[in-house]
Image: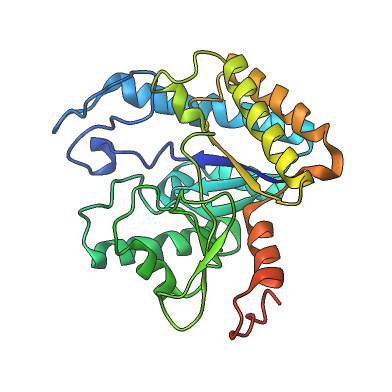
Length: 287
């Protein structure tokens, strides 16, 4: 099993009047069912998001460093701009920092021109703050045109705006070369703490252990798989939940070589080198 831990870094890029938006944030917090406040600030939501950048991120950073496990960060461009110490820590830790768009918006009704500009802007933010461009993209709340814009940008090895398989797969619908899709997950994801899916870290750990154990057994029978775990600084960054994540990481490491804990760009490069579609030449930068 290829196991990838994904840390969503969104705090600082959410909807907020202070960020120039016309409503407050409403998603993925301790306030289940929160509604956006049009033309008003939401003091509690702002404070709950602040927990992610002030405390949660650093707790998870310490955990991954102590356990010596890599991760992929889905980083919102504006959030990186507002939290440069965190951006520096990501680089120093050797993590992959993929793009989570410029804003943590729902892009369903955003025009292609605005979304294209946002993609270009966040690529430049990565170059300026991290020293390299992102090779992965997860818009998170995309529209039917998002993947075309990602391919047109020209520098992404993969995107993860899909939930349709346990393995990466290719599409040739966009551009003149295959584009890799590495599916993400909304089930093996701490977001379920925010929708009354998990009540404590132990439940989270138990579910993840069952999931990984099942995939390892499938792999040993000749059908290897990929597992992604989605994480958020403001959610699993709280101590009782982080304890469950630590328990799962220890469990995953106990499998030795049967579980490859890796970055998402490493999965992408493996797929390019071993499963590139016939009839196309592998790009030289990943060959």
